[in-house]
Image 1 (cartoon, rainbow, N blue to C red):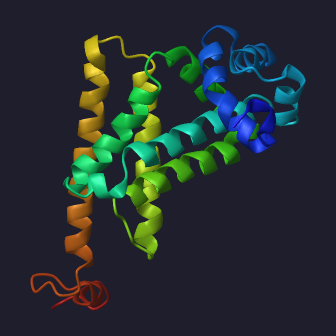
Image 2: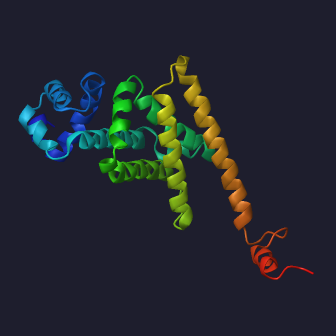
Length: 219
């Protein structure tokens, strides 16, 4: 499809990777947008119209959405199904780290913009959407409160790992990889402990009996 035939929403996504590359030097700015438009062969005025009233945060969200979409294509659920759940999550987060490798300065600037109070709600929604995409690819089908806790925890891991990633100068980002492994190990241990605690079939522990003893202590 020719650039001039793209809708504004399609143009936003087409421009986003180029904006991210230009943001290394120009930040998430109109200059970066113009450079991306020139690279894509799009009219600068139309490109600016695509991000009208959306500014830097709109550019960043479009960039993240392109990564979400590429991740879904490159790591489909059937491919991940061959792995253990821990490796599925690790592979998905690592994919996102690899997708921004070389763009650490753009990411650093993006994280600073997303942390601004006026952008907090949108940043949280964007992080939630990425976490949701990862869990769905990992095969999660939970519909109870676990649906929400899993995504909240993964979003926090994802955000914390990026914060380490942008300042990691170790060869091959080994410090980031080690940090990610530790965080995932911690979550897996928590999930196992939670499953044991909430399992109503356990013979060794009864939640109702425990609560009853709190109210009526044994004499």
